[in-house]
Length: 401
Image (cartoon, rainbow, N blue to C red; front, side, top):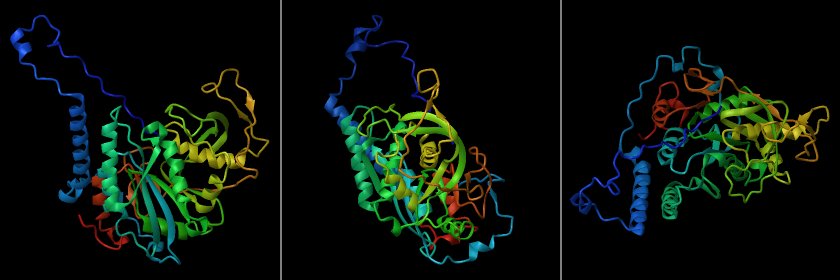
């Protein structure tokens, strides 16, 4: 579920400071290179970043991807192929898809376009999608950040599929705000025009034809345009949130107030699908549901919303402060409901269809016939997986790489 980032690497100083050491001869000092003017240095850095973005963006179209060596237990297609995989759906499932990516993940976005999104079966699913990025924050160099935005602009000229949320810094701690912005994009069309608002991580590979078939034949009772529903691979948590942080904050550490209640299910890391009905319900709340939740609890936030919509109305549930987020003593609290009415959401924990890649994560298992959304795959693995004989027919055409 959780992803941990290591801190910046520290480097030891050189054994001898050539500028200050009295042991260095005048001849050595006289041969020092002249300092680069700050404006020229910034220009060089900006040009280098732009070139790097171009290189990453075009590399996968010019250089064949390296061969992938699969492990002996990475896949399991030995069981009989389920019959529902050969049955057509009565109508395509309509998905509004958002993919969380870092602003500099040019190669990852291109791999997802090539391997996952190109040629999706329109008989089974209709997809409108966006890669979601925040405002570039590459240190304090404004010209470097501007250059990164220019590279994103070039990418959008070709694909028009990157949503830049400029009011949110593209840093891990603000990922929950990116998720909320993604949900607002999904709901930018009326709820009766689509079935699901889906959000996934950039290292998740989804077989959308299979996903549509599972929704139709494994979970036929769910009507996403008429009822609140949440689909994904579920974990458990008991923290809830109250909206206390203004949207215009520049403090990356600012977090909505945390309280503790009863246990609930939340989509753990791979991705999740909110029915269009639930999406509209969530976004109808005034004030907005709490969405300033520090990474890596951004996925917990989704489950906390769904649980709070119901449980904040239940007087039998005890909510209290936590010793980690409030001064002692721990005391009971009565959170204000998000909406005037209770919302009871159907939660689908699809343990067969949603999982981590073999030996990568807490929900790991071999990928098989019914693996719809597989987490923790590299770009090279995605491209190679698309070409496997067992799955390549699920797209309308063979990939062009």
